[in-house]
Image (cartoon, rainbow, N blue to C red; front, side, top):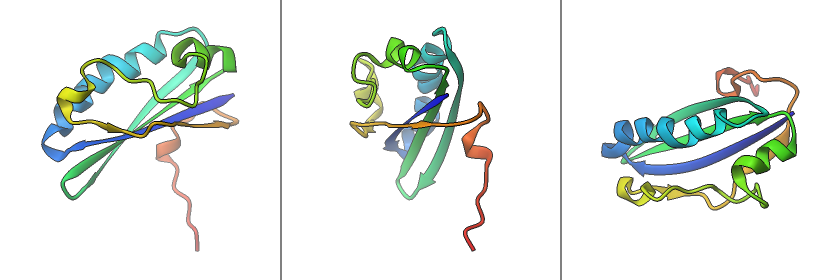
Length: 111
């Protein structure tokens, strides 16, 4: 199984509207594709910005590419992104994972 994690930030005042927009675009689009095993969104507020992390899980690289195109390491963007002041990381993190669990619910004690 493959996870694909994207990160972007918006001004804090756009947090709620961008969260709704993210569900209507990235989350909705990914879960509609055959082979998607889940989409998980985490939002972290930091000063004047809200960081958005979208982790999607997939059964094969072909299913990832059905969403992300021929280079699945490049972030997928949408026409209305600029309206929210989004600064998107240009690349995403792809990695092999063993389950469909929400990765944002796990806590790792690094002591």
